[in-house]
Amino acid sequence: MVSKIAAIVILAIAAFFFLRKASRLFAYVKAAKPIDRFENPMARIQAVLIYAIGQKRLFQKGYGGILHSMIFWGFCVLSLANLTLLIRGPVGRQFNFPFLAPYEVLGAPYNMVKEFFICLVLLGVTMAFFRRLVLKPRFPEPSMDALFILSMIGSLMAVELLYGAAEVQHFQRTGEEYFSWAFPVTGLISSAMNGMSQEALNTLQNVAWWINYVLVLAFGAYLPYSKHLHVITGIPNVYFQNRRPYGELRKLELEDEEKMEFGASHLGDFDWKRFHDWYSCTECGRCTSMCPAFNSGKPLHPKKISEQLREELVEHGGGEVLALAMRNGAKLVAQEDGSPPEGLRHLQNNLSAVSEEALFSCTTCRACEQACPVFIEYVQEIVDMRRHLVQVEGRFPEEVQRAFTNMENNSNPWGIGFATRGDWAKEFDVQLMSEDPGELDMLFWVGCAGSFDDR
Image 1: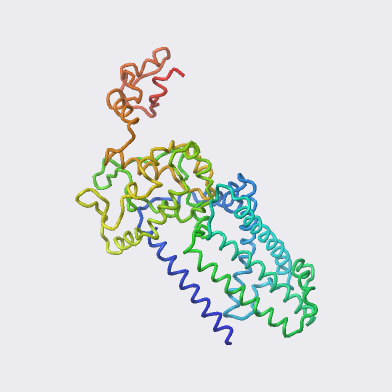
Image 2: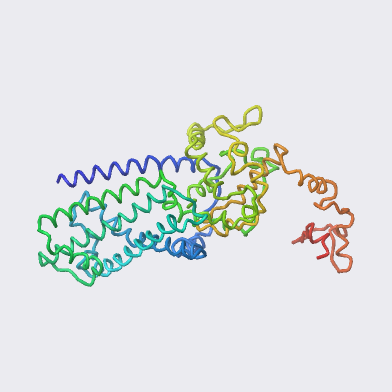
């Protein structure tokens, strides 16, 4: 009875800390601008199976992808065992899901598979430590948080094996029914316990169970506070990915005065998917390593964009301002001098990752998005912040001034006389709107390059 009460207390403490932080993070998302990311659910589920469960993009980076997949798939298999563990705390250690006891028809095969994946996780953790402490690649960058998480994962696996070995020893000594083939790893470890007294074995099994129980709860409670929040948000972020045509940018609303917007300069200008993206960043650095601007020495650093915007939202109070405004039904309005609403900072002026120079270094090639394993959308937010600088503050590189002037005077960035725009069509039998402006079902807009570039 005492152990059940202790388990309930520990469970309640872990749940409190988890829900305390998770509820705040959800409140920030809820306070952001709306966007529809629920259409076409079957295609989204398919993407989750391929890219989240299947880890497709991770395998583009061999060593890192392999070790991460081993850890991820191991956790997927162990999720049932961990759920059983959490229920056993308040209910009793005799609890098992139907047919999943180690001596039952489904439980024995599951236990064998579980032990195999525990070994895979331990191998993956070892590979991860080796990469971070010995190989030391440019990405991922050094992180004490990552080392702490890896240590917790390794400890969880080790304690799980230790408890399983003690359980096998218990079966052997009491003569309880069990399938020895279902314990391929713990059975070997158990042989080292043959000389232990029964009292020592009982103590070992009890201590291992409690360490396992506390570690699982501590790991879950810590995630919302850590840089590894993607463990929770990564799979949903793949589901909520952009299903629009690749390369399409969001159209600005310039006609409806109630909805008129000019890009983004503070957190209140972003939709909820942007916030979810920042939560989901794995800090793997694949985005930055693939960025042509970064690799050519420009200040653009996609990974730091997600990191700094997440810090602005979560750690610097931006999210609380948005959540408070939503609770009070208040509308975020710019101050009289044009600066962001009170409590929110001008992002481009305060964050190095989204400085004017960094933003205009982006070529919108989307190499960062193609590399991201959790489908973070960088280009739209970069373009939104550039739009604000250009349309509201008139800030842009000097090199762009000529292109803007040419667009204004001749409707093309090169300054070629607008009167020659249709010359390309003279040798073809092409109907022009100027000849017959009647109603049309479809109109082909050639664009500047097609109209003026002979290639």
